[in-house]
Image (cartoon, rainbow, N blue to C red; front, side):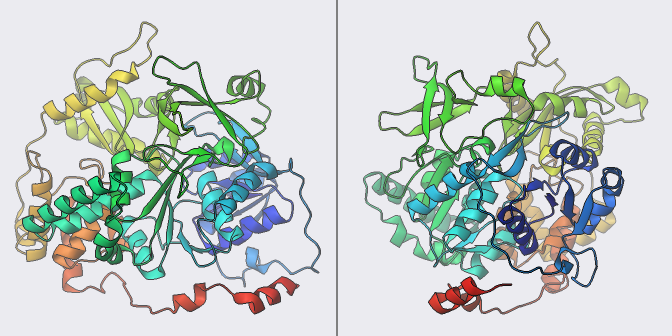
Length: 615
C-alpha cells in the first residue's frame, strides 16, 4: 500500500496499521512531482494508495489506469473516501511476521530513470529497533522531536518506530521551516532531536547569531567561554554543561540529546554542541541497512567518528590504501537481502562472500571506530541525507535555454552549480544581462523538480568544464573552480531604489534588516531584488538562524506562511515591517496546552486498560 503525505498523526497511524496487519508499506515522498509519483506506483506494484486529496487529484489518471483503490489521508471522517471512515471490524489477533517477511519498500535516490527498489524485511528493521532499545538512551520520560519526512528510512525507523517501541512521545513540528522547529523545541519540552547535520549546523548558527545580536563585548565573551570550555572538555573536564545552562534553556529548556544521521556531521559542529552541554551521538548507515548500522554510545564514543556497529553487525574496509582508507563494507541482519528483480544491481552491490558495498570511503581506527571520509561513487550526499546523481540532474538543467554547460556539486549541505552560459542564445532571447538570464533559466527549470534538487546558488565561468577524454566531468576539480568563480565573478551592479523602495526603507524595522543583510554580505551587489534562496543560498534551515536574529534584534516573528511568501529582500522587508506593526497580522495565535499532562507516560493502570481494549 502506498502512503504519501506530509508528517502527521494520520500518516503514523496508517503506516503502523499497514505494517502491523501484515501488509507492505510503500512510503512515497510528498514532494515527488507527477512523473516521479507515477514511476513509484509502477515500480512498487501497489494495490492501494492513501494520500492527501491534492495528491490523489493530481495523480487521478495513473491511479485510475491501474485500477487502484484510494483513501484520503486528510479531511474529515464524514467523507466516505477518508481512511477515518473505514468501518471497525471484529478484533482479531494480529499476524506474527516471520523474520524474512517484507515490511516496507524503499528506493535508492535518483533524479531520472528507474531507481533501484528493495525491501526492508522484519529482521532488518527489528535488528535496528532492538539495538536502539538495548542502548537505553531514551525511555518513557523522553519526548523526541522529529522534524524529518517520515517516508525516509532514517526518520521512519530511528525517529518513529524506535521511540514508540520504548514508550517515548514523538513531537511533530507544525512545519519543516527552522522557526517552527525552534518553536516546537521550546513549547513541547522535547528532550531528544532525531536530526540531520544541516539542522545542527543551523542550531549552532542560530546561537551564534543570538550572541552577536547582544553586541561586540557579548560576542567576544561568548567565543572566549566556548574556547575555554572546549579545551577543558578535551581534558575530560565537562564544564560546559553547567556554564551554558542558561543558553540551552533559552533555546530548548529540556533538550539533552542530539542524534545525528543521514550524512556526516562536521566534527567542529559536533564539538561545539557538545561543549554547550548537549550529548551528541552520531551514527552511520544507508537505506539498505534500515539506516542505522553504527553509532556512538554515551559511554563509548569518539567525536568525529560514526561509532561502532550495533547488535551483531560487522564492518570491514576493502582494499585500504597506505592511510587505511578504503570502501566501507557491511554485513549483518540489518542489511537488505537485495534489490528486487535486479540481478545486475545485486551483483554490483554485494561481494562474493556476502558483504554489502556501501560506496563510501572510510577507515577503522585501532579501537574499532568508523570514520567516513567521502564517497567512492559520484553520488552527492546532501546535508539532509538525500543522495543525488549529478549526471542526470545536470542534463535537466543543461537543457534550459542559455546554458551551455553545468557542473553540479554539493556545498553547505545543498546543491550549487558551476555554469558556462551561452551568451549568443541569451541575446537571441532578448536577454542583456547574462547573470540575470541564467538566473531566470535555472529558476524556471527547477519548477518541475523536488525542492532538494533545486540549486541553492550558482557561479558563472567562461571556461569549458574540465572533462576526461571520454567526456566525463572531472568532479574533484569542481569545488575549487566553483570557489574561484564565486570570488572572481563580475556581479551585476546594484539596482537603484525606486520611490516605493525609498518609502519602505524609511520604516525603522525595514531599514534595520536592510543594514543587517548588507553587513552580512560585504562586497556583494545587494539590492531589494536579490533572491534570498538563489542569490544568498538561504535554505529552510538557514531561515532558523535568520528568524532568531529577526526576533531577538527587531522583535519580528514570522509565520510559516510569511516565510513561504518571501522570495526577495523586498518581500522580507515588507512582511517584517507589517509584523512589527501588528504581530498577529499573519494569523498567529496564542494557544495554551497542558503538554506535560498529555505527553506523560500512561502509568500501569491506563497501560493495562489499553492492553485489554478490543477497539
